[in-house]
Image (cartoon, rainbow, N blue to C red):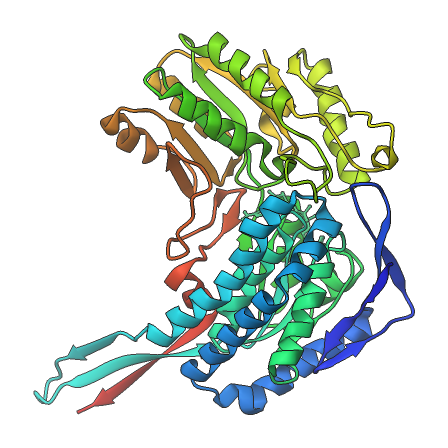
Length: 485
Ligand code: NAD
């Protein structure tokens, strides 16, 4: 039964006359009707956030904020199955993934930043002065103010909470806008925030689209002090322009065209397993997925053959089925985009090793956004399919002859988010990893994340780093206090 997803402002759930559909990509059924926030509603949300900063929230100690963050995590865990169902209905991702990654990591984000903020200290410098008495400098951390959080649809809950938790831990007030494709888990989070007693206005949720809708109203709003955004690189540029007028602080986690390099000394079983995960997880809709796979020429044929077998064996199915390994893409519109790249690959002269089309089920899933896992070979490095982010279950595999050539091919990209290296040679692992132009490089693994580490991208893949103290640094404004002794 479709339900209503409302905006949440100043502690109240707000309706709107303008609504849009939230559609299940598994079979095209209606999940919910979403109330779109117009400009006046976004104004209200920003105003509520500003008032919250001037109210009791502004006086909360780090320990008090941390205690509330733990309560939010408790609230998420208390409604764990509701969150899993909401995430699955919006995205079609397998139950096993939502249960083990998306929702637990969402709760973990609140616990992690609660612990971090309650244990972090400050820097202090003693300095000499001409009178010999000296001076003492220390820093205090203040919140940035009102933070706009704009999140994408691929890992809706995980990526929203990854921004929200540190921003709230640092004492900011939030206006969040989830993706129009996946608003359901954010709406549940608003209920949790409400139930655990987050002061009104500290967390506000507005629903809508990007241009000329809630996204743009928020990013161009003069009452917003900072924007933290995850999404496409071209959207990042649009937000940068919108945020320029009042010089907002920006943190961007953007697109990728990530390379994996498989050396001839790799443990091939491990490399194949890892590459299957890094290409096809979440139907290829993880910013960190490998879309370019470079394999040493001596093992190229064997690698491609084995990757093909594994891709063809992936179990496509309904998310609730425990056996399902791969679901649909997020929407028909996104499938049209990915299919246009499959067509382009043919025009550009690719060999389609497997896939390249859409599956047929003979049931209601034929109304969904399903697509075949696809492997391409034979394209020149200049091909658009090798240079542009596709964001689907697809990779291009190309051979290389030497370590230098592999590094050059991996780095020949406008993006620089992540890399994966498969080798058993320890020296090579260290030598190559540091030469890859990316924010994170995995060796003999993929998507293994320690939340204390810096996360972000270079080139078109982002601005700044979040994670651990890097998140707290972005969401805080340090003030230096200098005391003459
Ligand atoms: P998107 O850029 O289309 O949308 C992301 C969010 O921005 C949505 O909430 C959308 O409504 C909003 N938006 C769109 N245009 C806007 C505008 N002009 N002003 C303000 N808001 C606007 O991205 P998507 O399609 O939802 O997500 C997929 C993209 O996200 C891929 O490129 C992927 O690589 C990237 N991504 C990056 C990371 C990372 O950590 N680097 C993580 C996940 C996804």
